[in-house]
Length: 291
Image (cartoon, rainbow, N blue to C red; front, side):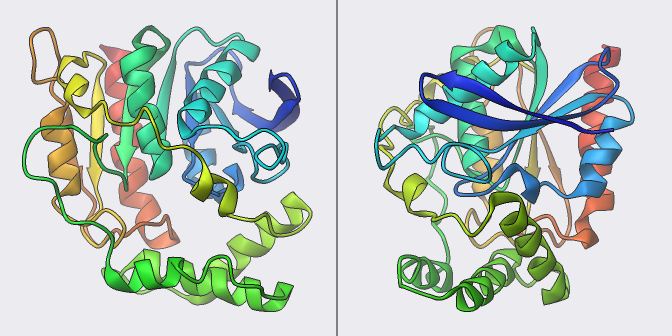
């Protein structure tokens, strides 16, 4: 059964953390994207990975049940990568498979550069390379998504906020696969209940992005890394995944990343992609553990 706890990562900042699976199995740390609670990781995916692993997910600062820290003590996005290491330390996890989505994928890249000894493997999806990676930069987010993000800070009552978030997920999902909006509504209602209300997305949007321009260093990565391409992703559209995979492990002593496509996948984890996506991730973890 899942167990929950609050962990202090720096003075005055506590993070909500959940574990499930066999305590003695290899650990898998799930790192979610910006302004998103760890509860956004779908239960079926977490349960699947927990069959063979000790799975850990958590709420970033200013999400879910974790401390609302930014207003009183502004932080940089790179501090959220340090939080991930603090979670491993607090749980006595020496090395973990680490899976990062969107902003979480950027944080995992920082872990690959600064804490490779703590990672058994890395899985990156719905994300792009840190700034400074070689090659032609891929296109940015779609115009429709940028226009929607521009309305993020507009005042809304709770019902309107729920509608805004459901519509946001529909945009992020892309047009690759059909999806029922009720699925996103259920996700947001679970997150709202977990968090005690909707948490503002402005903290992560306002956090200092400095220190993320380290893409050139990715060529030296030797940790086994999987990059999952989401071809319908409007936030990190193709060829973002190819660009990221090409940046990793290609230098002396590095280990090139493996690139796998999940057909129809957008910037989200709806029920329709959990089967093939789970197959890809579970296969990567099993191969690394076996090797």
